[in-house]
Length: 93
Picture: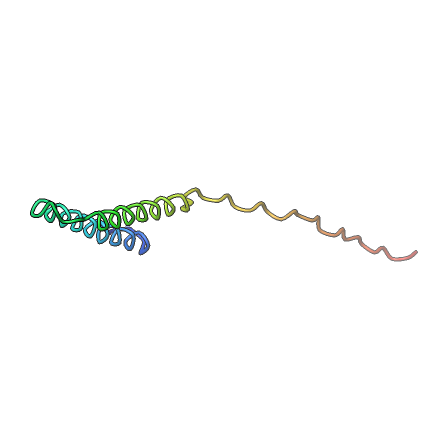
């Protein structure tokens, strides 16, 4: 899975897995708490989870928008200047 990937890509994949697991675990915890005791107020945790998800999605979209995968064309060659003309000096008669 990591063969041929740059260190930045590996870091992003690892970051995404860790954050994704944390979000899923928090969502599962909220669901379990709501099922066990429906009278518990979990709105603050739900808002926090929603804000976290929004921030992560925004960061990933910003990262994707900031990447430039199109190669830049090489700069044009410098204008060539003709070599100075060399003239032969002819001996005086």
